[in-house]
Length: 171
Figure 1: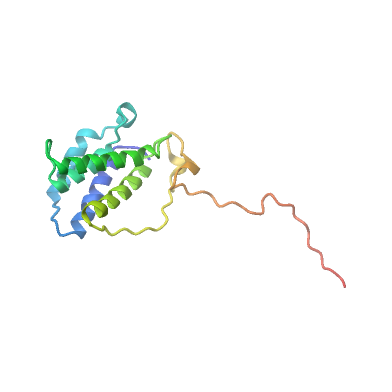
Figure 2 (figure 1 turned 60 degrees about the horizontal axis):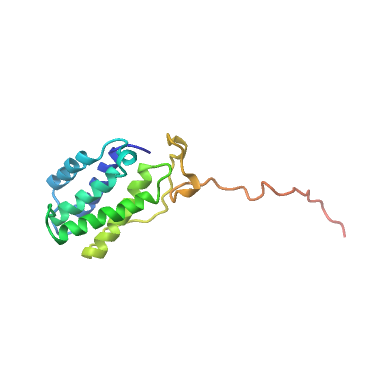
């Protein structure tokens, strides 16, 4: 549920999807570069200490690498920073308590939408219902019904009803 490895999962998944589905050549070196950049900003607990989740930084690294953005570049830096803001907002909407698994799912969804919107790149996404199987293991307590990925236990519709015995009717 928690841990900086989720930032690497987000960066690796996004760049691998780009590498496997689009004509711009994303290389293994690009993926390693994203991991190196992520390592500089994804540190355990920093989301609470600084308000910046490493997953947002990881997705930002992916956009920066894809665009060739650098400090001082024009539109490339703006698009990269805009992506980080949108990912950060999606993460913010899921806090209380935080769950990195939910953050990765939401962040990748935002990133996929941005690649389609900004560049016309449609990354292959399957949209089966995603339900978390780890809610009982969260060290800070799961958000349960407040989380879009919570696997709500099925409710017994008849649990609160009165049982009336059925008897044979005679006519």
